[in-house]
Length: 113
Image (cartoon, rainbow, N blue to C red):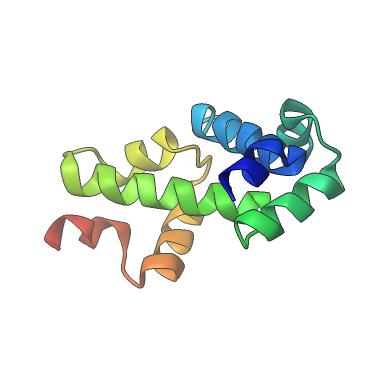
């Protein structure tokens, strides 16, 4: 299996996309930009993410950002607004809606758990 993964070009390009996303998580990310960095077309990038991550690229980005935000909120004294911007959200209200939908609680309550 390891040999197959090493030689499967689509998996290697998927990993390249993951690396790019993780190193640019706080920056604005688009499917087109991620695809270019991974050397894939947008449709190939979407197929790779569905195959290997069971998400679209932007769903994957959102989940990474929200998990990183939760960790920051639990481990630091940073404001909700500051954390939202740190993880790449441009709108605090959108961040709060996404956070509540994903975790079932408000971001300000993360420090209480």
